Structures are given as C-alpha cells and as structure tokens.
Image: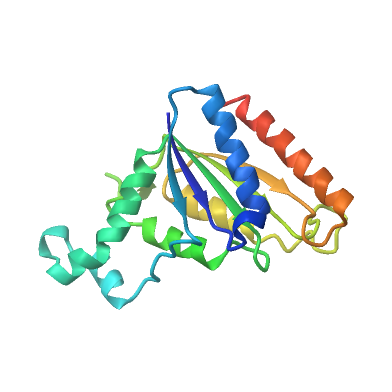
Amino acid sequence: MQILHIDSSPKEDISNSRQLSRYCVAQLQAKYGNASVDYLDLAAEPIPHIDGLFAKATYTPKDQRSPDMVARLAQSDALCERVLAADVIVAGIPMHNWCYPSVFKVFIDQITRTDVTYGYLANGDIGGLLTRQKCIFITTRGADLAAPSPYQNMDALTPALRAAFGFIGVEDMTFVDVQPLQFADQQAHHAAMQQGEADIRQVLAGV
C-alpha cells in the first residue's frame, strides 16, 4: 500500500489536524505492515500559485510546449505523479474561514490537469483518472457546525473537497470532521480529539 500523507496547517506542532493525520497514518501502517508513506507538507513547503505561463502551458499540446512551459509545469507534473501513485490519500485539513487553507487550494489547482488527472472520454464527456484512489479527509473545525449550531450552513469545506476530488475521479471519499476545537474549553477540546481518533479507527476498519 502506498499512502500519500498531506498536511496543510501552519500551526506546526500545536496543530490538531496534523496530530490526527499522523494518528491515521500510524494506524494504517500498523494494519498494513508493508505500507509506505510519501509525506507532503504544504505549509512548510508552499506550492507556487497558478500564473499565466502555467495556464497557457496546460492547454498547449505536450509536444508543442516551450522549455519555459515545461519548466513551469515540472512541479505540477511531479505532484500529479505522487497523487496517481497513491493507493490512499490521508489529508489533514484545518477549516480556515469555512473552507480549506489557501495552500491546499493551490495543491488542488496544481493536480487538476487535463490529460493527466482527468481527460476526455470517447463520447466527449470529461472523466477523472483517479478512480482507484481512496481519500480520507480529516478536517478540524474551531466551532461546532453540527445542527442546531448557528454555523451549520457555513461548511464550504466539505462540498469543495467533494467537487474537486470527484472531478478528478475519486469516488471513495471519507470525511472525519472533528469539532469544536479552537472555540471550545479544554474538556470539550479533549473530547472532540478523542472522538476524532475513534472515528478514524472506525473508518480504517473498512480500509
């Protein structure tokens, strides 16, 4: 099993999402002794935003790209290879202002590539190519967004992840949503983290 482990929180050692994503990967490694892990820290090593050259290069046939275009797409090509090689993607994602951190958005932009992670089918429809990958999204939220919370309709994170990864072909997506954390007392925070670990164990029972 090849695991792609992604972290995106800027909080380093005090990050809840990092703690839980590490826990998830450790549980997978314990279950599958031959599992290998490819680690990607989007906060520690930010990926460049999409620019005009990148956009133009992606829509230029591969054999017609200039050396500058090839160089501009090199990091994206490498990221796509890592995603395509994975069997399971474990992503720790803190909710930032109701959605994912900007570094994770850039990652999505870099791996959503025509004829690499999605392509045109024989009937002209667009189809994603990550059909065998399983994604486990571990999201941490400062507030409780579960009903009857006043914030229950403000979750832009879950639909955005479903749309982005569904477009590139991922059908098997699991969400472990851990809340409330930032705006909770110590007891509620601890209970949420314990529940998050329990939810991860339950998810992995079926992997």
